Length: 287
Image (cartoon, rainbow, N blue to C red; front, side, top):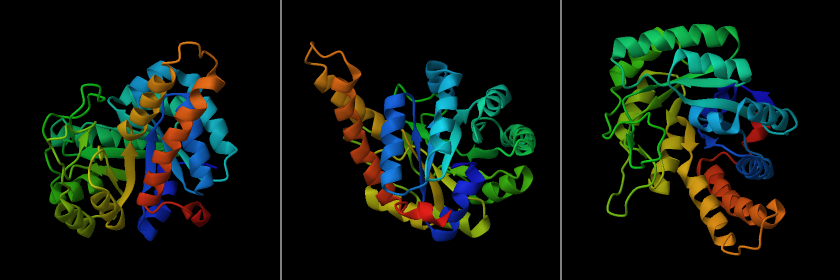
């Protein structure tokens, strides 16, 4: 069942769970995510970043749409970290049902202005819009480039002003996460106090980016306290490709059915854990 972001987050906000948004850049990853979410009867967001789209091409979105239309669970197709109005319009044209415009590193007035422009155009096409306030750090040289080196925490009062002026359907907030995987010497910590203040001021569903290596108990607490969408990229790609490297040590292997099933099975373990951690398992029946 193909839905937009506003539709898929409505039940999550009401029932206090978070829908996972898995960054998906190959048919193998798509297969693992979809099969496990169907098995868990969980709604899911398939996130495709512009860099990922440049690799898989527009035709991949059509494949995701077909998967969604034949799935017994709600599926949203989301543009992750759209950097410009042009990128967002292209995503809408090829079939995304949700887009993110990330102008968080611009001055507030510019962020508001471009977000307003995106919301007006996207809502005309029944496409939902996510934006971001504050900046989410990055620990990974392969991160999408949309994050800053340091976290700038979201100001709750500014968040209130932002959603009132833009009419966004979801807001990504910076409360102590970074994109990518952390070195062992760094232990991240969520500012749940900031989250609580934001949820006391606005009704817009909130989004958490960059939660790799944050303790499970913090992530679960965030889902219970108002975060409705949590992005996952490194946490599924890393084990998938680690397993690929392990299997390909056998240089005689060359057929996909000899290589990828074990990689997909490894990915599914992570998907299952995230779905249950976010309280999303079994929630497809709410839609």
